[in-house]
Length: 114
Length: 114
Image (cartoon, rainbow over the protein chains, first blue to last red):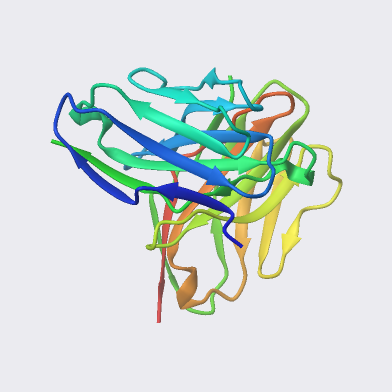
């Protein structure tokens, strides 16, 4: 069972470079999310999607863009990376019909921006 | 606005003892769900337990139970008979019904001593 798969697992960027993080889920979930985790701040929502072709801003969307062209994939883009975007990024998905609507998380992407 | 507060940055407990991790929440919406997640040193986020605001009984999942006190707006996680493998970061989270995002607390790092 793959569940939620994130690629890459680690990445180092220079300031100003761009990159895309890929999230794929094989559970046919409607909802997908991108969170970032920073020490002492828990997880904060960057963007989310409630279905194919839809996206919405979360708590900390600035500097990021997302796309959900296919139901199973949710891409997070950094157009011009900044050191403040050094963080661990988690993708998650959930089923709108599941009791409790618990989130299933990927294993995370450690991103460092120098 | 929704808010989750975890006031214990770190806790140290002897193996086999019970441990309570504190979580208080703030919302004006009467319908919401409360979650606890565990994050071991490997980094993945593991769902532990869920409590709905209208649930009459406290949720239990094996050694985990949620001490839900609605009037006090608290949702403490109780781990009975702690084990070395319980050492991890623990996050409390809340979702208001109709809202898409899960809001996380800052987390509590639990260390179980042999």
